[in-house]
Length: 468
Image 1: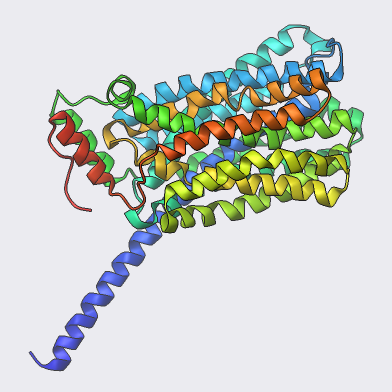
Image 2: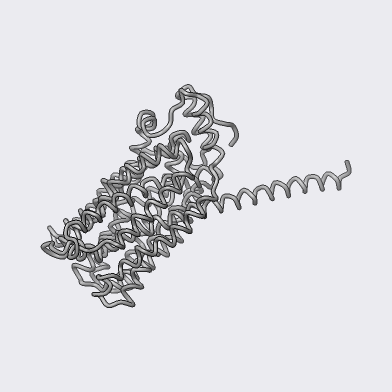
């Protein structure tokens, strides 16, 4: 073979590898898009409820409350029902997802949450059907939370299990970035309604439009999710479970074999979840009740902050691939502990620029923790029980953290008439997460197949597949 032939052959091989790499990247982008679209839909609907609970539900469904704050606290209690339902959804859909696949659960959850949200927009208020109104609201909220509880694990794992080892943090952060997009859309729709309608019409029917619009996005999201495929490593793990009756999967197995992993995931989630819901929910309550700040300007501040949050999350995911999962997450927990101590004085100035800046900085601190969660948690558990493990760690914490954060903050504000106890509450939550991060094993760049191999050796199983 001549030199030119050898060079040509080598060039052809390099071109083929390059083409293969581009094809893989293109396929991964489609997986990311499918996960993101469905996640945008489901979190649009979930956060729509959060914003409506802050602005509307206290008046429409709890008009007999003693004060405005009492009505808001009652609305947030129904909001918490969704968080209580999320671990149940995580358990049920985690079991299904570990057995049948991530794709099937994602199709079911998007339909469930969409139907519940649409029906919320149809509910008569307390003045029309009395106590049936809040009762039906709670029932629909439970269904919504149940579905969202199964959504997150499937969406992030579909991406994480397709991602290269060296860039898993970046790629799997994109479904996380879909969360502020969903929140952005919910805020944008409500903001538009407040701009074009008088306050009495907004309270009467304007807020319902945002809930009804969910039907359109659900159809689009469901269609896109029918065109995704399972990751090869999951198909191999499922084949192993089917071939070896001694190989178990799912919720009971992960609780039995990986309790430290679940507790570690809960510790990571704790401060992140509390900080987020203080920023996106309680700040509305604080500015509205303490300062009677304009609702439209509040929504504009959140709108801008959500855009920045979306941009920052993938970049933080990339940073976790370069620097490691632990240092990035630790920075988020430490900075998050400081946020309230400078943010609330900025709120008290009533300067729109400072309010936007305070909310935006808070969400950037949050992104330092939030972006790396899918990669970290995926790397904690073997494939045969990964869906159940990440769903439990992620969703159970929501009961103790996110669901209670706005309620606790509103109660502290009502009791002490100052933001200082709220700031201390956030600081304690961040201290708990710092401990969890410090005790965490660094998993940057680890192969998920190696995680499966370690699990197989530890429990006397046949290894799942081969390769990187």
